[in-house]
Image (cartoon, rainbow, N blue to C red):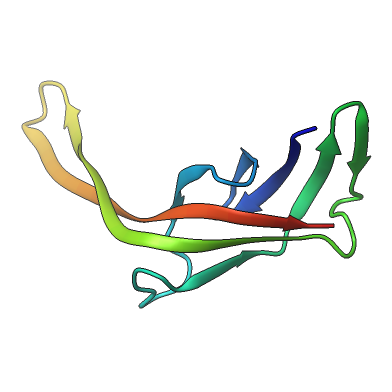
Length: 107
């Protein structure tokens, strides 16, 4: 049966299985390709019909992965305007991410 886990990283939750590739926010600076990344906040672990839920985290479970590459997201344009007041502000933002491959779920 496929084992899966629900992990929390950077304020977001991801459902992962071994071999999955996902984009996570850069919370640790200066990781390069090949560096390991450990997901310690595992909220749930499941395999088929067997599910272990945490309160809030499942004790003794780790999800290990490695960084494929540090990447940057799409550019987001933030535009503010107040009508009839002559107020306009334009600002851009690009979020930093890590492309991560999940190696193992250690329960």
